[in-house]
Image (tube, rainbow, N blue to C red; front, side, top):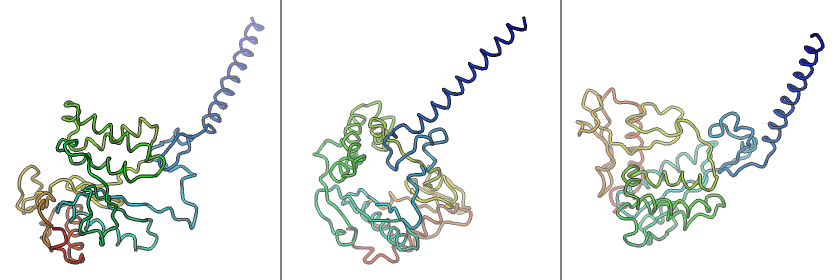
Length: 293
């Protein structure tokens, strides 16, 4: 009996040894295998942590080396687009001039096919719109088409045509079109990236969206797509026209006036910040009331 127990323990020890050995070899192989393609680089060993949050070591900037961001803005020649482009470019320049800024160059990708009156104010490349009727009234399809014509970065250059084709297929499918609506081409980009095996490093809370996100601390982009409607008590009344409101769609035919009224007390910081930033830009951009037309 004692010999049988001893033999069992020896076999068990050998088994545990081989399991441990194989596990270590698997980890080493996984870490040293060739990385997949990532837009900002990625070390597969970080997949065991959180690949879409953690910045890979080899992608981090060495000290005293600046890896600048190129800002790309797609646009039309409509007044609604022009005044928003001017405000964005104002804030881009202001942030770019700050010490330690990581802002690089700025390009407005104008997909109207013709130059407009902002060419001298904002660095712009003109690309062709989609052939007439192909967008089926969904003008945002011009965005992936604009990138197809403009991009020359390896990874994104591969994605752009697929992004365009997937957008068209999603738009032409009634169920998909109904499900995704206005953000269809955004999801098409995610699908195109997946089809090419390109993954992205994501940063939680990178963007805020008033009126739903209340604070601005540690946020980088202010996305103001939603209307902000409040009563004079500072209470949100979304879905109705407020006693105080800011909605960019109120200015489809021309720019908002300078010095918009600030929201009443009690309105979240994000909404107040949005209106203050619009007011600062319109107060400092030359010919505010005329250049958008």
